[in-house]
Image (cartoon, rainbow, N blue to C red; front, top):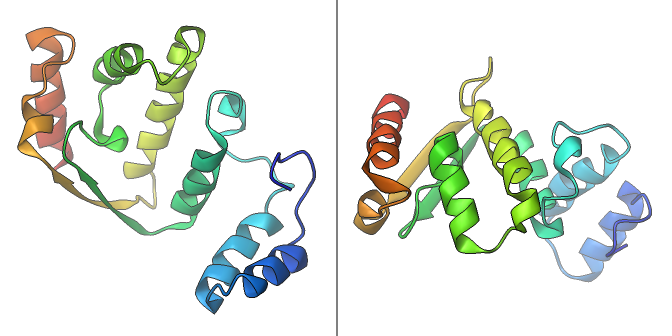
Length: 152
């Protein structure tokens, strides 16, 4: 179950969650994801660059109507320009260099959720440090700030 090698069945997931004391809305949300596990997800092309814990988050985000994020140090991924995301991804070391380009393309595909036919309503609280962070020089920073203003 933990390695993701085998399909999870909604009834099995519900039993585990009940045993762990999860509330009914949580059980319904997670069993809904398990019920869709055999369907191809939009992020399947990036499955090898997305951490396991983030797959669940992105799956839940895909079912959500709205989201709230708080970022004190960097801009939220959903609001990053491609250049900003590329520089940040390469600079952090959290993503292997040979996966950086694919991870950035995943982030950009995820951000399209904000402009879809049924867009995700995003409420973002961004710390001043994130707005002042110099990522890849002034040109990238200015373009990123323009993008934030447009998104607002």
